[in-house]
Structure formats: C-alpha cells, structure tokens
Image (cartoon, rainbow, N blue to C red; front, top):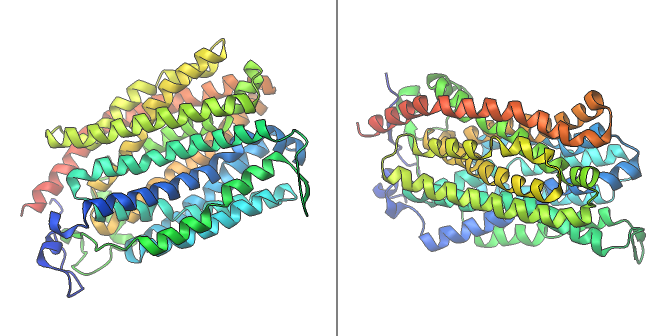
Length: 467
C-alpha cells in the first residue's frame, strides 16, 4: 500500500492549527528566512574554504613533510571524509531531534579550531589529526542547514532557497583557491617573519587566515538566528506516530519501501563527487605539471572558474527546479540532474587532456557548470521524497555516500592511478581523465534510469497527502 502522509499533531501548545498543516502562514517571514540563508551561506562558504585549501598547497606540503601524492590525497580525502561521513549519521539524527542552530554554532567553533591546528602541525600525523577534526566539525552543518531551510521556506520556494545556499559550496571552493593563490603570490617564497613565531611559511599563514572567521561567524549565528518551528509531516503507514521522532528502523523501512528511487537519488551524487573532488584536489598540481603554470597563477583562475561556473550551474538548477515543478513536469526536482549530467559528461573527461592551458580552463568551466546543475539538484530532490523527521538522516546518508566516494575516493583514486599505474608525476592529467570517465558514465545511467521510479515515489506521497 502507498505510505500515507498526514499532518503531525504538534507537541507545543503555542503552535497554531495552521502550523500543523504546514501552510504559508506557519513559516517565518520571507525576509528573515533569506537572512538565515545568508548566515548559512557564510558558514558553508567558510567550511569549503577550510576543506579545500590543501589542494593549492600540494608542493609545499609534500616538500616539508616528505610525502607522496597518495599520502597527500589522504589529507585531502579520507582523513577528512571518513570522519565527516560516519559522524554525519548520528549528527543528522541529532538535527532531526534537537536545536539545529546550536548544533551549527558548536560545529563552527570546532572545525575552526581544527583548521588552526593544521596551520601549526609539526608532522604528517598532526596534519592527519587536524583534518579529522575538520571533518567531524563540518559533519553537522549540511544536515542541520538543509533541515532548517525546509522549515523556513514554503515548498514552492524551497528549490530556489536550497540553490542559493548551495552556491556557497562553489564560491567557497573557488575562494579557497583564490585566497591561496593570492597569498602564495604575495608572501615571499621563504615565508614571512612574524614576531614571536619566526619565519612562517606561506601555507601555514593561509590556514590561519582560513580559521580566523569562525568565531565571529559563530557568534553572529547564535545571536541572530532563531530555531524555527518544524513544519512536520509524518509517515503514518510506516509506524511513526504523531509527536514521535523517526527511528533509524523507520528510516530504513522507508528507504526499502522506495528502494528503486533511493538507490539512485542517494547514489548518483556520490559518483559525480568522485569527478568533482578529484578535479578540485589535483587541478592546481595538474596545471603546474602539464602546463608549467605555478599555483600562484593557476589558483586565482581556477578559483574564478569554480566560483562562477559552479554558482551559475547551481542557480540555474534552482530556477529550473522550481519552474518545472510549477509547470507540473514529472519528477521535476530530479529531472534537472539529468540535464546537468548531459552537459558535463564529456568535458569532465577531456579538459585535462587539452594541449594548452586555455583550452583546459574552457572545458573545465563547462564541466563545473554542468556538475553544479546535477549536484545541486540532489538535496532538493531528496527533501521532496522524505518526511520532515527523516530529512536530517536522509541528508546525512547522502553525505555519507558522497563523502566516502567523492571527498575520499576522488582525490585518492587520482593519486593511486598516478603513482601505481603511470608511475610518474607528469601523468597526472591522464589519471584525472581515467578516473572521471567511468564515474561520469555510471552517474549518467543512474540519473537517466531513476526518473521513472522517482516519479512513482513522489506520486505515491502526493496521493497519500490528499487522503
């Protein structure tokens, strides 16, 4: 039988019947909701800055700590990804049950401290531990933020709201390369003398600069952002009663009930993340090794490409998602991902193989634009087919898969192919292409074959809501 959705009975006596029904009047004012998006945008931008900055610093980190490409990829990948993804599951459950604003406040302070510790690391082990701390701290942000957005915006505006928020990922990734490139160009190669610390290398100063905004941003969040009332709908046919939190068992049963949908909507972003994070982690080194362009020159260009193309693709995704939904396009939230995957599938394989840097930059721009469309479709698509009390867990599972495969495997797969298949640093461009090709093809198949089952799940939920 189709799973039924009915309005939850609110526990708080102050909540009006309109709120129980999830009507427009039960949501916070639109102006304040967009302010909250701005604060979450800033938090996510900072998280991306802290997460992606090592990509620009391959050479100084390898030189100072005597590590290989594979060892560096663990810093950029699995040291962060394993803890980011595994702690994301219990933290996603906390986001479903607790105060999401307070969770993000604590997370900001935690990963900011870990980023500062990375700047002062004295061994490769210290760097690994600091990256673990960044991963744990950032794990709470996405589940809590997406859950907050769902309770701040009516469903008709949710695609645009999530898209605007998602833009911070692209801008933050680009800003990390811009900041790093500018610092490397501005600071003398031997470092900068600082009273009490001696001569501090440029890479350490870059991480200090990335850590500093965490405290003021956390305080701004605590003082100005309110925890909203949950606009709650419950799956009554799955054993979740009004006023209860969805258990892990409830969530698993719901996923199994709609296995064909979730096997695709939760998995395709992970395949695309292999491409995105692999390219992001190694692009500065690739331009240096293949085109003789140092990170101080390639970093700002790459930063602009990632920020502009990624933001443009993400915003287009949000516009199309809401527009197609309003027009009644079947599986509109998910179908947008198919458009994006068609745009980026070929350029993501070809850009590292170009004969000159200009052509490589151009194809990389197209690849990032299409990837931005496809990837930013995932959160809204997932939110549309899960009830409120499961959203944090659903986003955490999405991040688990994307983290283990994308953030973790993306950089590491490229390094392993470079070190163990081609056996030379100069073959990095071929390693990037070799890892992108199978992921792009499989991801394209997952999305294309997932439209029909996604539409069936969405239709069943809509029918159940009208009962």
